[in-house]
Image (cartoon, rainbow, N blue to C red; front, top):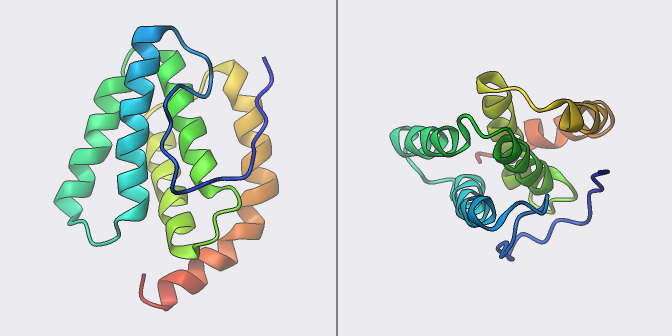
Length: 135
């Protein structure tokens, strides 16, 4: 299976998993997407609430490698061609947190590494500018 990234449409919610998971995991993937979208788009959340959101994601994907990859891919989707540098930066923050907690599967590792190497360095300056402008 090969993962390709398409233009990120920020106002749309997912109604199915990006990785074509079984129905019960697909429903969980949609739920995880709502939490990821809220984390990325609502910059007025308290740190405690952000931590609760991250913990929720981690609990949902624990012991489910397919859902781990799904959560990583959904977060990557939020960083790709994001027109808002603040949202993009927050998505990169979340991706960083998730990668500190769990590792992607071998399938996702290559795609993720390639994406981070090609996109991460070019996007860093946009995120730094967004932070200086006050989030």
